[in-house]
Length: 126
Image 1 (cartoon, rainbow, N blue to C red):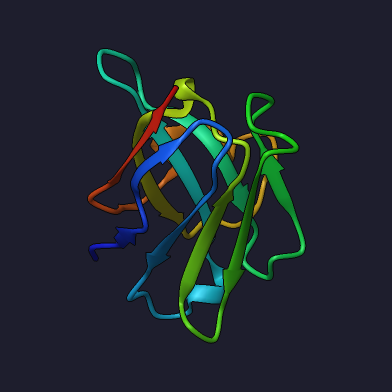
Image 2 (image 1 turned 90 degrees about the horizontal axis):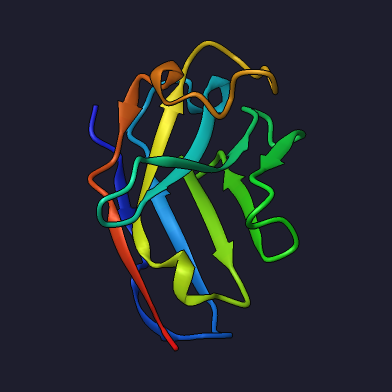
């Protein structure tokens, strides 16, 4: 299963972008979905996750108050609204899907996720 991330681009600091991830997965609403990012020369890092129903979310401290994850189960799509972007947000952003259900203790662990997208590049200029 290949997730399809889109919406990246070049934006000035303080600007906004909305990333989308289309997930051709049966029973999409049972999957925890997440976004990770990877800057050049760095490890892939957790950004945000959302439970299957959308009732629960968890965001990394670095993006709290600026980014918001959401989903539309009717469209098999998860979103990442990115506001007040900073140059340090520059990275390739990946969406991921986990079929094992919501657990806030482990949603930030990369190894938990079964399916990944190809990534979309976000570049924030100063």
